[in-house]
Length: 286
Image (cartoon, rainbow, N blue to C red; front, side, top):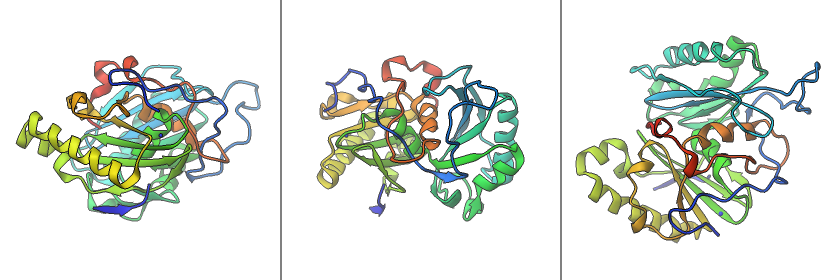
């Protein structure tokens, strides 16, 4: 069920195409972006990118080209999924990366103006929680927040045509881009693809469901390309999928965060990671 509205891909097994350097990216919820990519002392801006998932919270620092400049760190998401505990974990994780200049957050829910409208894989208490405002107050840095599948998309897309991103982890996330521009807050119900469903019915039947879902999306959007990420993307049988579907690295969920700090038109992040660059630890369920 389509609840909200949110691009020539290589053959199966090939990595996603490089993003064109001229594409400028997005304006996301939170504070206004800086108009320069350098600090007053002339040093490049350091962007802390945080990917909040239902089972894990990951973070890294990015340079101005969207490339990691340090290690990638992961912490377990508090089992309660409550806002206070998750925010405490995020803040503690952020302290590990100091100093940084600004923050981009991918969050597993619908985000409007920095406010969580729903987070089905966490806790009901997230509804109407102003995550951008709370984090900015605690970190003393400007913060921008977007849906995690949208952020993953910015790290994966080519920037032309109709591109869809599907993230398979604890839940299922989706994002839609048209010529590099995000159509925000796309939420397409796919409960039969969740992690619980995979464990219940097994990989073979689950993959048939994935293939059916992809056909459904093609019938609705007639996509140019579709990218599949998330922790369970490693379980996907690409032989059941058309050639314009690509498995992408979960690192894109961090690299795409740089796009949240680009004013103007939305588009992909140059220098994103490809599927072939993904390490085993980057395939942890989101």
